[in-house]
Image 1 (spheres, helix red, strand yellow):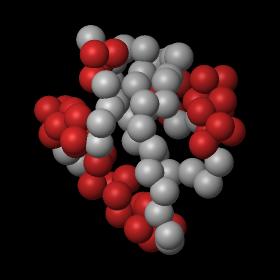
Image 2 (tube, one colour):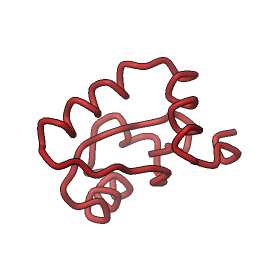
Image 3 (cartoon, helix red, strand yellow):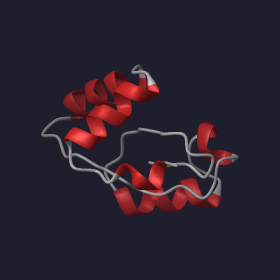
Length: 82
């Protein structure tokens, strides 16, 4: 997700729409509470929860530039990233 302060946030969910609504209502992750609104800019689907959590962990532990490079390779339009 892209936060209002232009930071990037990644997380795990089984219901994208519900989770996005939670983040924008201030009831999602503590990180996004003061960075609203958030916008879904990319998502992936995984066969198992374990795969999803590993991907989330890997994304969260990258530098900003590596996150942007990953998103660019996935076809995400980075012009909205400021």
